[in-house]
Amino acid sequence: MTFEIAGRRIGPGEPAFIIAELSANHNGSLEHACLVIEEAARCGADAVKLQTYTADTITLDCDAPPFRIPGEGLWANRTLHDLYKEAYTPWEWHARLRDCAHANGLIIFSSPFDPTAVDFLHELGMPAFKVASFELTDVPLIAYAARLGKPLIMSTGMAVESEIQDAVDAVRRTGNQQLALLKCTSSYPAPAAEANLRTIPALAERFGVVAGLSDHTMGPAVPVAAVALGACIIEKHFCLSRSEGGPDSAFSLEPPELRQLVADIRTAEESLGRAQFEPTAKELLARGYRRSLFAVEDIAAGEELTAKNVRSIRPGHGLAPKHLPEVLGRRAKVAIQRGTPLGWELVV
Image 1 (spheres, helix red, strand yellow):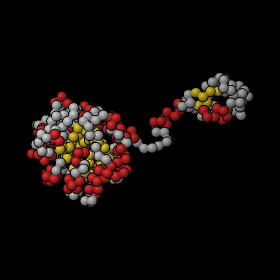
Image 2: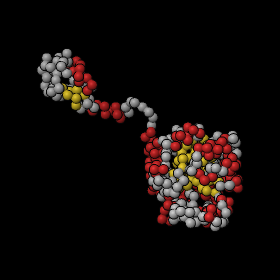
Image 3: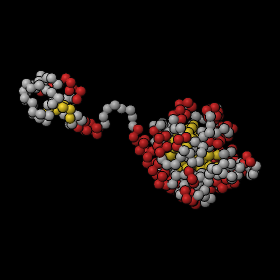
Image 4: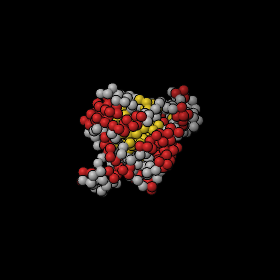
């Protein structure tokens, strides 16, 4: 249940694959986008991800009610076309961004939003495809991408189990078994209380896939918890500064936060270790300071051992405390000086 993206093994037992999502955080500038990629590499990310669409391939330039975003959220009252026209990454930038990522030691891939984007990314040599939550029900698009035999990472925000199953089946019918599912809460930003991270191991077990998290909460806590639950992939939106604005900046991490996220995830992975019921090497050194039975008063030969002259104290050089009931009421075989660890050779 593992696969590779550009030579990087992804799955259980491997370090979490940490993806910095560029999305709209280029703020309309190719040079700025390259700076974001360079900073993601410095922060320790494994990969950077783009989104490949145009406003016209993803929606219609239409002001009718279905095409206007309602409510009071981040993008309220904007038309979809207007939002995507601002947010899209120009296709003519992709080759330069690919080269920038490679120059900085990062894997790069993208989310295609229609078949023309799939073809374009394939021609650029992108090593994987990411399917966004809102496209999870576009089974023809998923199948079209899967036929190329590259790994697919699919977010599951908003989906019910049958929709996830349809998407998984669409991939597997093509013979492509390189598949990951990401738990995702499709709100921006997302409250931690709605993360439902226990879904991550459930996704892995139910669908037999690599599982991970596409996270829209703020800070590192939720991704770190996800890794502890078995997440093999972590995806976070990333920008240089939220103060720069842009459609995605409000729920994106800044460089110090991404750096901390990476460090915390690596610490969490190191701490998971393995199930064991034996002391570590350093604990073995400390065992001598546990409690044990000592003479706490001078005891004459033949004198009875009592709760007054024998106690369980530190360090651990005497009999284990569990033997106290067996010792009390017996007598000293020889004179025992105060501060002597008690052993069976000293009692009768």
